[in-house]
Amino acid sequence: MSLLYLLPAVIMPPSALERLASLHIDYPMLFELHNPSTERVTHCGVLEFVAEEGLIYLPYWMMENMLLQEGDLVQLRNASLEKGTYVKLQPHSTEFLDVSNPKAILETSLRNYSCLTTGDTILVAYNNKKYFINIVETKPSAAVSVVETDCEVDFAPPLDYKEPEKPAPTSKANKAPPEVLEEEPALKKFNAFTGSSRRLDGKQLAEPAVNSIVEQSQKEVKEISSDSKSSSASASAQQSGKLVFGANKAPPR
Image (cartoon, rainbow, N blue to C red; front, side, top):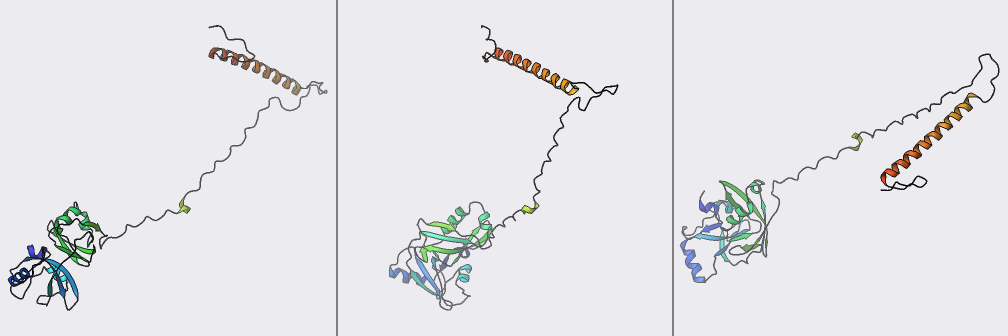
């Protein structure tokens, strides 16, 4: 790939150098190119002064920016540009952002540029690939010099960038209703010796009835159980070293 194809500079005839030297212009030499048929304007530097008289040589990608065909008339004049402080760039393809450290590659490539113009498309070559990048915005003016200047660089989303699709929200209707636990039926209480009592000879039974006897037996069982629990609590409290009101004193240690 030829140097002229990559560099954003033109080749002028020797007579242009003589004319510029007599004007005592500032360096680096910067120029404004104007296509009178389309009113397209861009800016560039100069590479050499070896072109044939009456001709200038432009990189092909610069001719595309200017909507120029070979042999078209172009106006060229010296320009004085402010130093750039801010540049916003937009790659044509997301592939440029996939390369390792795209900002470092861009910084190296921009060293070949003398100036940038808003609305232009520049070419960055890396690993035998060509990446085209739009100049979206420049500050403090529409055309700036980028020679020996500290310029802030910002990126706009690439032209082929697509927003990632958001996942569809899950439908609440598909969720299974919470399981309702069935209440267990209450256990029936067992009552011993239910029903009425009769004598074997058919005569009427004298009181007290069997139910009264059962109630008396249950009462005695409860009293025995209560005494047992009291004794157990007293023994347990004494073993743990605590005093329980109404129980024996703890044995001396």
